[in-house]
Amino acid sequence: MKNIILILMVSFLGFAVQAQEKKNKNAHYTTEVNGICEQCQKRIQKAAFSVSGVKSAIWSIETHQLSLILNEEKCSPLDVKKAIAKEGHDTDEVKAIKEDYDNLHSCCKYERL
Image 1 (cartoon, rainbow, N blue to C red):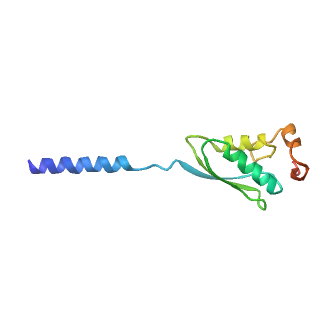
Image 2: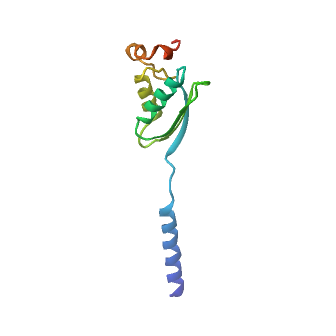
């Protein structure tokens, strides 16, 4: 009888520990975004943070690389790229439409390919 109770307690404890396991749903991505200055940096990062699920967004003026941490259950890298393109900045996958690019301040206009 004691062995059965012991086995049940160990089994219950095993299920309780397994239920506490937290799964990490955050993913890290790096993507290229065109821009020139600190105004661009603020605009790009603000556009990234406007997407629900973005935990971190840091754009480097020197390398033009945007480092993202996002919750993949809430958004995808493509969602972030679309939001950035809507602000006038081209990404490696989504290009801004001409009207959005034309709305950028004159110092923020980069050479488009």
